[in-house]
Amino acid sequence: MTSYALALPSAAGSLESYVQTVNGFCILTREEEIDLARRFRQEDDLEAARQLVLSHLRVVVAIARGYMGYGLPQADLIQEGNIGLMKAVKRFDPERGVRLVSFAVHWIRAEIHEFILRNWRIVKIATTKAQRKLFFNLRSLKQSLNTMGVAEVKAVAKQLGVKAEEVIEMETRLGGQDIALESSGEDDDEGFAPIAYLAADDAEPARLIEREETARLRGEGLHKALETLDARSRRIIEARWLNEKESATLHELASEFGVSAERIRQIENKALTRMKSVMAAAA
Image 1 (tube, rainbow, N blue to C red):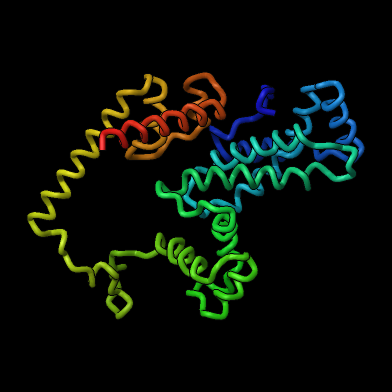
Image 2: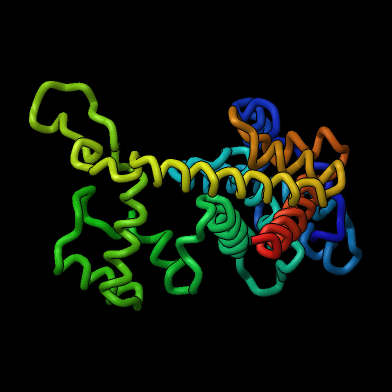
């Protein structure tokens, strides 16, 4: 439904208020759902489509909550899920005897997955279909929070259709972000952190000079890349990626420029692609 503009509540403000709002929308009966879906498909009735979307926004919130552990703004996750919901409504066929909620779950999760994979890390950790499946299922398939043993690794690999080595690598990547380099300060054997065992080779004068020069060149490349963008694109990139405090959400920028959050995302993706091209050419 990307070609349609539906008036929907925004999660840009208070999430608590947004959740209360979407939970206030009535859940449709099967008959009401079929009637609205037919009106939309046969008569292009946008109000019918809007009612279908509104009645399922609570489903998006529930699904988005399951992805809070990736450190991304909840409002953005909900926004992406809402996009998936609208796509589902556009493709929903009421004559197949399936409820919209069952059909929409796939589209909602797909949009959220794509958003997480684009933004969770600068260096993508999952590129193939099998790796993506492993990325989103490894945590739930693990029997405990401890490192998996050989037997568990083989079982997970077989279930997901990947190599055991890929399971081990993905577990290392996911677990790596939770390792504390600094000591917790407790006076016991567990108080020793990995940083205590790292050699300070990078503290050598030659290494320091090399690192400073590399940082300077990268900074200049980034500055030049930003200069190639128009004012709006530059503002979006700076707010989303270069803010030292808290990154702006798609909804916040959409409100600032008076456009949809989807449009902000399109501008952001185009600007990032251009910047990468400029920086690669200058390297």
